[in-house]
Amino acid sequence: MEELKKYEDKMNKTLDVLEDEFGAIRAGRANPHVLDKIKVDYYGTPTPLQQVGNISVPEARMIVIQPWEKSLIKPIEKAILTSELGINPNNDGNAIRLIFPELTEDRRKELAKDVKKKGDQAKVAIRNIRRDAMDAFKKMEKSGDMSEDDRDLAEEKMQKLTDKMIEKVDKAVETKTKEIMTV
Image (cartoon, rainbow, N blue to C red; front, side):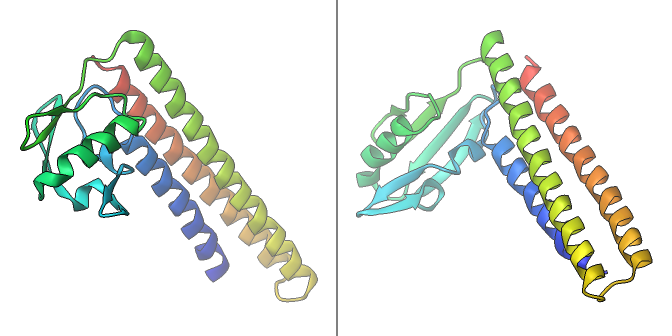
């Protein structure tokens, strides 16, 4: 059924957004994805950090940003300082180093709570998609585009799909929480 496919795509997009959000949560190790949302003022245009320099991870808790133009060092530094990253950049004139401190137990618990909250938001979004689908199936039945049996079957498949997606969200939350809580 193509109706189900449409709702499955929406649920998959919700999962993708959740994965992106989890990628931006730092878990004690240097992950270049924490820089994904940072924009640098590049000649008056907010430009993603990845487009103004080379980003590498030479050590487990360090990211090095090598700008393509030396004049970008100050704007990159400013963008990192004003971001929610919470790390002071070290500038040696050629590159910027971000050294990630070991997370405290309290900070780990805080991040784990944040992960759970984002997971719950994703579940709500998935359930809203299911509700929209169920409403659409009822309208289709009323208008004669779908029989009662077809509607029952579609609703049953939609529920199974919803359960599968909720399970994926729970698994993603569990994996990210484990990653955060591992010292």
